[in-house]
Length: 576
Image (tube, rainbow, N blue to C red):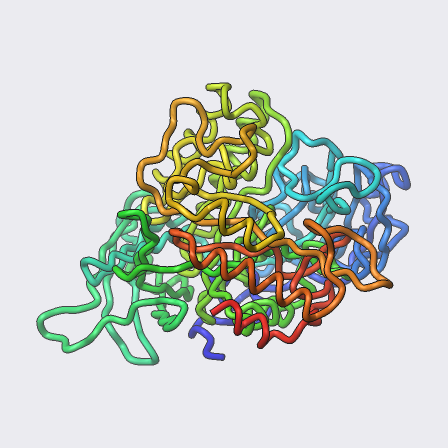
């Protein structure tokens, strides 16, 4: 596996890498809210231990208690002040977090699926410091929660909740003037890349230089002023004086350029960071998905990103790599990450391994003015934080009308879906956006369909013409393809959920779609038949449900422990 130049094992933010950092994962003190007073918690006097970043509900946390708790506390010691600014990063905390350093509030954040950062320099002493985190999590469907249950027990396709810290916590040490944000946009038609950036302390004597290399060879450099809060520079990768063929990123050829970034203050280098980018263009046009001017047929797996021992937290980097490799071995070229925003290192491995990803907003299940504000803020944070990854090819706002149950006829709900579509396109005009995956689309770049018919012949007959596909989910008039006021405009069509066949042996329990199968032969016959029916449809791709079993669902191609139910090569034969 060929890593980028800036790669550091375990580094949580692979698109902006600095060498001076400290991983705070590992053993922390812990307590449920009813076990301690706030005074004791702020003093670090907590009765339990927990292994961060795994939530208390999981086996790898060391606790493994599924009982819902609305308040939890964490505490650990961190090093003293080091002469640089100390940025404290939380990759994911569910749901309301308040952070204290030495008993004083250093900041707070609301929302489970976006990173947040606090500058804690002024709170640190030169000696050892006490870091405390208070996490509140209402077990309510109004929250952005994805597949986390809000009842006491699992039901349907909703699983054990996630509470508190569930992604990496880390410290980063930076100078007084440093690169704050970095947005990388490939411009394939111009053989160029655009860097939009900000520094924390803009000034007339601050500049940022970008040095680009490919496969260890210098390509070009560019310098831009950082006199204002935000800056931008377009860098051409070819010139009349340089004989060089640009390398385009695709799943078949995951070409990545390395970038060294240097911030200068008064002509002196004060901050250095590393990044990378892929030069590629992915659009929906003329009824097709198109990658680098070539039609792209999506063979995706629905991937909910659950592990038996660790819930929605990947147990290791190796576990993320394994999921991608197994998917590729089975003939899939990407995943629809369903109802979660994966660890950013997953996107990194998708980048370097050539694996396409749809990124989806984990749903809430309520509609109100407060929910609109919460969803909008968190979704735009998610888009901005994951924008740079070339493997990310599509954004999905809502799924199956969750959180917008009356989208078909209620203008307020369809306006929300379309509003988020346009807000996403404002930040990211280069990727397709789906407003409501499965049915009842508002403004949308792709028409997506969900149908779990298990008989291949019936499945083929229901969608054997373009007109039938455009009409939406056959036999389900409750969920038309478009909301009132919207219609089909020639978008590419993707069957983004189908299959879901339960492979149930005698000793297993759980559910899938249709009658479960009990032998390799029976499963492969059905899988092959459904895939065969899909391939005859006039569509731009599909997403099979799903990669693994998840808790009570036994409709994965793999078991929850990632062992294949049938040989992966047999899936591949039928998939390609």
